[in-house]
Length: 376
Image (cartoon, rainbow, N blue to C red; front, side, top):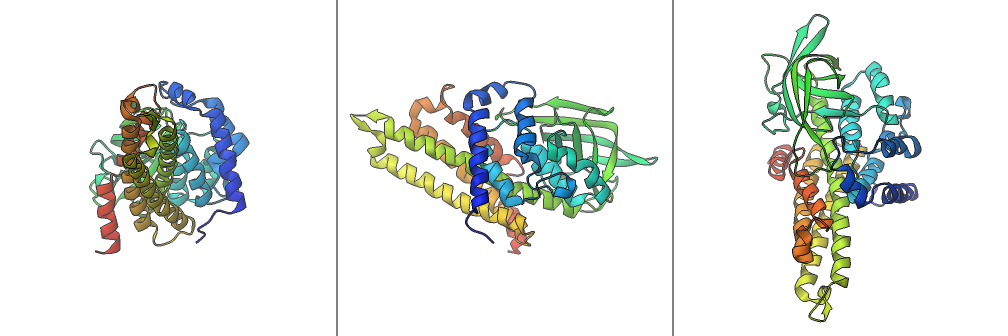
Protein backbone atom coordinates (compact mmCIF):
# COMPACT_ATOMS: atom_id res chain seq x y z
CA UNK A 1 0.00 0.00 0.00
CA UNK A 2 1.42 3.41 -1.01
CA UNK A 3 1.81 5.80 1.90
CA UNK A 4 3.06 8.82 -0.02
CA UNK A 5 1.42 10.37 -3.12
CA UNK A 6 2.93 9.98 -6.55
CA UNK A 7 3.82 12.95 -8.75
CA UNK A 8 0.66 12.34 -10.76
CA UNK A 9 -1.45 12.38 -7.61
CA UNK A 10 0.19 15.61 -6.43
CA UNK A 11 -0.58 17.18 -9.78
CA UNK A 12 -4.19 16.00 -9.56
CA UNK A 13 -4.49 17.67 -6.15
CA UNK A 14 -3.03 20.93 -7.47
CA UNK A 15 -5.33 20.88 -10.48
CA UNK A 16 -8.46 20.24 -8.45
CA UNK A 17 -7.51 22.87 -5.87
CA UNK A 18 -6.89 25.53 -8.53
CA UNK A 19 -10.22 24.75 -10.16
CA UNK A 20 -12.14 24.90 -6.89
CA UNK A 21 -10.44 28.09 -5.75
CA UNK A 22 -11.68 29.69 -8.94
CA UNK A 23 -15.12 28.09 -9.22
CA UNK A 24 -16.08 27.46 -5.60
CA UNK A 25 -15.03 30.44 -3.48
CA UNK A 26 -16.98 30.85 -0.27
CA UNK A 27 -19.11 33.57 -1.85
CA UNK A 28 -20.31 31.04 -4.43
CA UNK A 29 -20.88 28.42 -1.73
CA UNK A 30 -23.09 30.87 0.13
CA UNK A 31 -25.06 31.63 -3.03
CA UNK A 32 -25.59 28.01 -4.03
CA UNK A 33 -26.61 26.79 -0.59
CA UNK A 34 -29.64 29.08 -0.85
CA UNK A 35 -30.80 27.62 -4.18
CA UNK A 36 -33.19 24.63 -4.47
CA UNK A 37 -30.80 22.65 -6.70
CA UNK A 38 -27.73 23.34 -4.59
CA UNK A 39 -25.22 23.38 -7.44
CA UNK A 40 -24.20 25.34 -10.52
CA UNK A 41 -24.87 23.33 -13.74
CA UNK A 42 -22.08 25.12 -15.64
CA UNK A 43 -19.45 24.25 -13.05
CA UNK A 44 -20.74 20.67 -12.85
CA UNK A 45 -20.39 20.42 -16.63
CA UNK A 46 -16.81 21.68 -16.41
CA UNK A 47 -16.01 19.15 -13.69
CA UNK A 48 -17.07 16.43 -16.10
CA UNK A 49 -15.87 17.69 -19.47
CA UNK A 50 -12.66 19.53 -18.53
CA UNK A 51 -11.41 17.62 -15.49
CA UNK A 52 -13.21 14.30 -15.91
CA UNK A 53 -13.67 14.06 -12.14
CA UNK A 54 -17.04 12.23 -12.14
CA UNK A 55 -15.31 9.37 -13.94
CA UNK A 56 -12.00 9.47 -12.12
CA UNK A 57 -12.24 5.93 -10.73
CA UNK A 58 -14.73 4.47 -13.21
CA UNK A 59 -13.04 2.03 -15.63
CA UNK A 60 -12.26 3.28 -19.13
CA UNK A 61 -14.56 0.60 -20.55
CA UNK A 62 -17.47 2.53 -19.07
CA UNK A 63 -16.33 6.01 -20.05
CA UNK A 64 -14.20 6.84 -17.01
CA UNK A 65 -10.53 7.65 -16.46
CA UNK A 66 -9.75 4.26 -14.95
CA UNK A 67 -7.77 5.58 -11.99
CA UNK A 68 -8.48 4.43 -8.44
CA UNK A 69 -9.95 5.20 -5.06
CA UNK A 70 -6.76 6.99 -4.01
CA UNK A 71 -7.32 9.58 -6.75
CA UNK A 72 -11.01 9.79 -5.91
CA UNK A 73 -10.10 10.36 -2.25
CA UNK A 74 -7.77 13.22 -3.24
CA UNK A 75 -10.54 14.87 -5.25
CA UNK A 76 -12.97 14.51 -2.35
CA UNK A 77 -10.49 15.90 0.16
CA UNK A 78 -10.14 19.02 -1.97
CA UNK A 79 -13.92 19.27 -2.38
CA UNK A 80 -14.33 19.05 1.38
CA UNK A 81 -11.76 21.79 1.77
CA UNK A 82 -13.76 24.03 -0.58
CA UNK A 83 -17.22 22.96 0.65
CA UNK A 84 -18.07 22.34 -3.00
CA UNK A 85 -21.80 22.46 -3.67
CA UNK A 86 -22.29 19.74 -6.28
CA UNK A 87 -23.91 16.28 -6.58
CA UNK A 88 -20.50 14.61 -6.66
CA UNK A 89 -20.75 12.41 -3.57
CA UNK A 90 -24.22 11.17 -4.40
CA UNK A 91 -23.55 10.50 -8.07
CA UNK A 92 -19.94 9.27 -8.06
CA UNK A 93 -19.34 7.83 -4.60
CA UNK A 94 -22.75 6.31 -3.87
CA UNK A 95 -24.48 5.57 -7.18
CA UNK A 96 -21.50 4.71 -9.40
CA UNK A 97 -19.97 2.38 -6.82
CA UNK A 98 -23.31 0.66 -6.24
CA UNK A 99 -23.60 0.00 -9.97
CA UNK A 100 -20.02 -1.29 -10.20
CA UNK A 101 -20.51 -3.55 -7.17
CA UNK A 102 -23.95 -4.94 -8.00
CA UNK A 103 -24.65 -4.44 -11.69
CA UNK A 104 -24.30 -6.86 -14.56
CA UNK A 105 -22.00 -6.06 -17.45
CA UNK A 106 -24.93 -4.82 -19.54
CA UNK A 107 -26.17 -2.63 -16.68
CA UNK A 108 -22.72 -1.11 -16.19
CA UNK A 109 -22.48 -0.35 -19.91
CA UNK A 110 -25.88 1.30 -19.83
CA UNK A 111 -25.63 3.33 -16.61
CA UNK A 112 -22.01 4.23 -15.92
CA UNK A 113 -21.02 6.32 -19.00
CA UNK A 114 -23.62 8.98 -18.21
CA UNK A 115 -22.36 9.26 -14.62
CA UNK A 116 -18.72 9.32 -15.76
CA UNK A 117 -19.40 12.24 -18.12
CA UNK A 118 -21.50 14.12 -15.59
CA UNK A 119 -24.55 14.07 -17.87
CA UNK A 120 -26.40 11.80 -15.43
CA UNK A 121 -26.86 12.92 -11.85
CA UNK A 122 -27.58 9.85 -9.79
CA UNK A 123 -27.97 8.98 -6.13
CA UNK A 124 -28.46 5.99 -3.86
CA UNK A 125 -31.38 5.85 -1.41
CA UNK A 126 -30.65 3.63 1.59
CA UNK A 127 -31.76 5.20 4.88
CA UNK A 128 -35.41 5.51 5.79
CA UNK A 129 -37.17 7.74 8.34
CA UNK A 130 -35.64 5.58 11.10
CA UNK A 131 -32.24 6.99 10.11
CA UNK A 132 -30.56 3.57 10.07
CA UNK A 133 -27.77 2.81 7.58
CA UNK A 134 -27.73 -0.98 7.94
CA UNK A 135 -29.59 -3.79 6.18
CA UNK A 136 -32.07 -4.22 9.04
CA UNK A 137 -33.19 -0.63 8.51
CA UNK A 138 -34.40 -1.36 4.96
CA UNK A 139 -38.18 -1.76 5.06
CA UNK A 140 -39.15 -0.40 1.62
CA UNK A 141 -40.69 -3.22 -0.43
CA UNK A 142 -40.05 -4.21 -4.03
CA UNK A 143 -43.05 -6.16 -5.26
CA UNK A 144 -43.07 -8.28 -8.38
CA UNK A 145 -45.41 -6.83 -10.99
CA UNK A 146 -45.48 -8.57 -14.34
CA UNK A 147 -42.03 -8.38 -15.87
CA UNK A 148 -40.77 -5.76 -13.43
CA UNK A 149 -41.07 -4.40 -9.92
CA UNK A 150 -42.96 -1.69 -8.10
CA UNK A 151 -41.59 0.10 -5.05
CA UNK A 152 -43.66 0.83 -1.94
CA UNK A 153 -42.39 2.81 1.04
CA UNK A 154 -40.28 5.80 1.96
CA UNK A 155 -36.63 6.81 1.92
CA UNK A 156 -35.15 9.76 3.75
CA UNK A 157 -31.85 11.65 3.99
CA UNK A 158 -31.23 11.00 0.27
CA UNK A 159 -28.37 13.17 -0.93
CA UNK A 160 -29.38 15.26 -3.96
CA UNK A 161 -32.59 13.24 -4.12
CA UNK A 162 -34.51 16.32 -5.22
CA UNK A 163 -32.42 16.83 -8.38
CA UNK A 164 -31.12 13.38 -9.37
CA UNK A 165 -32.20 12.12 -12.77
CA UNK A 166 -31.45 8.48 -11.86
CA UNK A 167 -32.21 7.04 -8.43
CA UNK A 168 -30.92 3.74 -7.07
CA UNK A 169 -33.00 2.30 -4.25
CA UNK A 170 -32.22 -0.33 -1.65
CA UNK A 171 -35.36 -2.39 -1.09
CA UNK A 172 -36.38 -5.89 -0.10
CA UNK A 173 -38.81 -8.54 -1.25
CA UNK A 174 -41.97 -8.70 0.89
CA UNK A 175 -41.75 -11.12 3.79
CA UNK A 176 -37.95 -11.14 4.03
CA UNK A 177 -35.70 -9.87 6.80
CA UNK A 178 -32.03 -9.19 7.52
CA UNK A 179 -29.69 -9.94 4.60
CA UNK A 180 -32.25 -12.11 2.88
CA UNK A 181 -34.18 -10.53 0.06
CA UNK A 182 -32.25 -7.24 -0.18
CA UNK A 183 -32.08 -5.86 -3.70
CA UNK A 184 -31.04 -2.74 -5.56
CA UNK A 185 -33.35 -1.09 -8.07
CA UNK A 186 -33.13 1.94 -10.30
CA UNK A 187 -35.62 4.34 -11.85
CA UNK A 188 -35.81 7.81 -13.31
CA UNK A 189 -36.21 10.74 -10.97
CA UNK A 190 -39.44 11.81 -12.68
CA UNK A 191 -41.07 8.36 -12.62
CA UNK A 192 -44.82 8.20 -11.87
CA UNK A 193 -45.49 7.05 -8.34
CA UNK A 194 -42.38 8.80 -6.96
CA UNK A 195 -42.81 11.90 -4.81
CA UNK A 196 -39.73 13.92 -3.88
CA UNK A 197 -39.64 16.47 -1.07
CA UNK A 198 -36.56 18.51 -0.06
CA UNK A 199 -35.68 18.37 3.63
CA UNK A 200 -34.77 21.30 5.83
CA UNK A 201 -31.17 20.59 6.79
CA UNK A 202 -28.56 21.93 9.20
CA UNK A 203 -25.96 21.94 6.43
CA UNK A 204 -27.46 23.59 3.32
CA UNK A 205 -24.28 22.91 1.30
CA UNK A 206 -25.43 19.27 0.99
CA UNK A 207 -29.05 18.89 -0.09
CA UNK A 208 -31.16 16.05 1.27
CA UNK A 209 -34.61 14.83 0.26
CA UNK A 210 -37.35 12.47 1.37
CA UNK A 211 -38.68 10.12 -1.32
CA UNK A 212 -42.07 8.45 -1.19
CA UNK A 213 -42.70 5.47 -3.48
CA UNK A 214 -46.31 4.58 -4.21
CA UNK A 215 -46.09 1.85 -6.82
CA UNK A 216 -43.27 3.47 -8.82
CA UNK A 217 -41.97 1.03 -11.42
CA UNK A 218 -38.28 0.20 -11.23
CA UNK A 219 -35.74 -2.09 -12.83
CA UNK A 220 -33.56 -4.43 -10.81
CA UNK A 221 -29.81 -3.90 -10.57
CA UNK A 222 -28.12 -7.26 -10.53
CA UNK A 223 -29.92 -10.27 -9.07
CA UNK A 224 -32.93 -9.42 -6.94
CA UNK A 225 -32.62 -10.51 -3.32
CA UNK A 226 -28.84 -10.91 -3.41
CA UNK A 227 -27.54 -7.36 -3.16
CA UNK A 228 -26.61 -7.39 0.54
CA UNK A 229 -22.88 -7.89 -0.02
CA UNK A 230 -22.74 -5.29 -2.80
CA UNK A 231 -24.64 -2.75 -0.74
CA UNK A 232 -22.45 -3.24 2.34
CA UNK A 233 -19.34 -2.88 0.18
CA UNK A 234 -20.72 0.32 -1.34
CA UNK A 235 -21.45 1.79 2.09
CA UNK A 236 -17.96 0.87 3.33
CA UNK A 237 -16.38 2.55 0.31
CA UNK A 238 -18.57 5.61 0.86
CA UNK A 239 -17.62 5.82 4.55
CA UNK A 240 -13.92 5.68 3.67
CA UNK A 241 -14.31 8.42 1.08
CA UNK A 242 -16.45 10.58 3.35
CA UNK A 243 -13.64 10.38 5.90
CA UNK A 244 -11.28 11.85 3.31
CA UNK A 245 -13.76 14.62 2.51
CA UNK A 246 -13.94 15.45 6.22
CA UNK A 247 -10.15 15.62 6.41
CA UNK A 248 -10.20 18.30 3.72
CA UNK A 249 -12.70 20.41 5.65
CA UNK A 250 -10.81 19.92 8.93
CA UNK A 251 -7.53 20.96 7.29
CA UNK A 252 -9.14 24.15 6.00
CA UNK A 253 -10.39 24.95 9.51
CA UNK A 254 -6.92 24.47 10.98
CA UNK A 255 -5.42 26.74 8.32
CA UNK A 256 -8.05 29.43 8.87
CA UNK A 257 -7.70 29.28 12.65
CA UNK A 258 -3.93 29.40 12.76
CA UNK A 259 -3.94 32.39 10.41
CA UNK A 260 -6.52 34.15 12.58
CA UNK A 261 -4.49 33.45 15.73
CA UNK A 262 -1.47 35.08 14.08
CA UNK A 263 -3.31 38.26 13.15
CA UNK A 264 -5.85 38.77 15.98
CA UNK A 265 -4.29 41.05 18.57
CA UNK A 266 -5.43 41.10 22.20
CA UNK A 267 -3.69 42.83 25.09
CA UNK A 268 -1.11 44.13 22.66
CA UNK A 269 0.00 40.76 21.26
CA UNK A 270 -1.30 38.15 18.77
CA UNK A 271 -3.58 35.65 20.51
CA UNK A 272 -1.53 32.85 18.96
CA UNK A 273 1.27 33.74 21.36
CA UNK A 274 -0.84 32.76 24.38
CA UNK A 275 -0.15 29.29 25.74
CA UNK A 276 -3.83 28.34 25.92
CA UNK A 277 -4.32 29.07 22.21
CA UNK A 278 -1.14 27.17 21.33
CA UNK A 279 -2.48 24.14 23.20
CA UNK A 280 -5.81 24.32 21.36
CA UNK A 281 -4.07 24.56 17.97
CA UNK A 282 -1.83 21.62 18.88
CA UNK A 283 -4.87 19.54 19.85
CA UNK A 284 -6.55 20.44 16.55
CA UNK A 285 -3.48 19.35 14.60
CA UNK A 286 -3.22 16.07 16.49
CA UNK A 287 -6.89 15.26 15.84
CA UNK A 288 -6.46 16.15 12.18
CA UNK A 289 -3.43 13.92 11.66
CA UNK A 290 -5.10 10.96 13.36
CA UNK A 291 -8.13 11.41 11.11
CA UNK A 292 -5.93 11.79 8.04
CA UNK A 293 -4.01 8.60 8.76
CA UNK A 294 -7.14 6.51 9.18
CA UNK A 295 -8.84 8.09 6.14
CA UNK A 296 -5.86 7.50 3.86
CA UNK A 297 -5.52 3.92 5.07
CA UNK A 298 -9.21 3.26 4.41
CA UNK A 299 -8.92 4.71 0.90
CA UNK A 300 -5.92 2.49 0.30
CA UNK A 301 -7.93 -0.56 1.41
CA UNK A 302 -10.69 0.43 -1.03
CA UNK A 303 -8.11 0.81 -3.79
CA UNK A 304 -6.75 -2.68 -3.21
CA UNK A 305 -10.13 -4.32 -2.51
CA UNK A 306 -8.65 -5.40 0.81
CA UNK A 307 -10.56 -7.57 3.26
CA UNK A 308 -9.70 -4.89 5.82
CA UNK A 309 -11.91 -2.31 4.10
CA UNK A 310 -15.06 -2.72 6.26
CA UNK A 311 -13.15 -2.33 9.52
CA UNK A 312 -10.86 0.41 8.18
CA UNK A 313 -13.82 2.34 6.79
CA UNK A 314 -15.71 2.25 10.09
CA UNK A 315 -12.61 3.33 11.99
CA UNK A 316 -11.97 6.19 9.56
CA UNK A 317 -15.58 7.37 9.63
CA UNK A 318 -15.75 7.37 13.44
CA UNK A 319 -12.34 8.99 13.83
CA UNK A 320 -13.00 11.55 11.10
CA UNK A 321 -16.41 12.52 12.47
CA UNK A 322 -15.06 13.14 15.95
CA UNK A 323 -12.01 15.03 14.70
CA UNK A 324 -13.90 17.28 12.28
CA UNK A 325 -16.46 18.28 14.91
CA UNK A 326 -13.79 18.81 17.58
CA UNK A 327 -11.71 20.97 15.24
CA UNK A 328 -14.76 22.96 14.15
CA UNK A 329 -15.75 23.63 17.78
CA UNK A 330 -12.22 24.65 18.77
CA UNK A 331 -11.98 26.87 15.71
CA UNK A 332 -15.15 28.71 16.67
CA UNK A 333 -13.88 29.16 20.24
CA UNK A 334 -10.56 30.59 19.08
CA UNK A 335 -12.41 32.98 16.76
CA UNK A 336 -14.48 34.06 19.77
CA UNK A 337 -17.95 35.50 19.34
CA UNK A 338 -17.08 36.22 15.70
CA UNK A 339 -17.04 32.48 14.94
CA UNK A 340 -20.81 32.09 15.06
CA UNK A 341 -21.63 35.20 13.04
CA UNK A 342 -22.96 34.94 9.52
CA UNK A 343 -20.04 36.94 8.15
CA UNK A 344 -17.48 34.40 9.39
CA UNK A 345 -16.98 31.25 7.29
CA UNK A 346 -16.07 28.98 10.22
CA UNK A 347 -19.71 28.23 11.03
CA UNK A 348 -20.27 26.83 7.52
CA UNK A 349 -17.66 24.16 8.22
CA UNK A 350 -19.13 23.50 11.65
CA UNK A 351 -22.49 22.77 10.01
CA UNK A 352 -20.85 20.44 7.49
CA UNK A 353 -19.00 18.69 10.31
CA UNK A 354 -22.19 18.22 12.31
CA UNK A 355 -24.11 16.90 9.30
CA UNK A 356 -21.26 14.59 8.27
CA UNK A 357 -21.17 13.14 11.78
CA UNK A 358 -24.52 11.38 11.22
CA UNK A 359 -24.30 10.89 7.44
CA UNK A 360 -23.75 7.17 6.67
CA UNK A 361 -23.98 6.41 10.39
CA UNK A 362 -22.70 8.23 13.47
CA UNK A 363 -19.46 7.37 15.32
CA UNK A 364 -21.24 5.11 17.83
CA UNK A 365 -22.78 3.10 14.98
CA UNK A 366 -19.41 2.69 13.25
CA UNK A 367 -17.57 1.77 16.43
CA UNK A 368 -20.13 -0.96 17.01
CA UNK A 369 -19.59 -2.14 13.43
CA UNK A 370 -15.83 -2.06 14.01
CA UNK A 371 -16.14 -4.22 17.12
CA UNK A 372 -18.32 -6.71 15.24
CA UNK A 373 -15.99 -6.81 12.24
CA UNK A 374 -12.95 -7.37 14.45
CA UNK A 375 -14.77 -10.16 16.26
CA UNK A 376 -14.33 -8.58 19.68
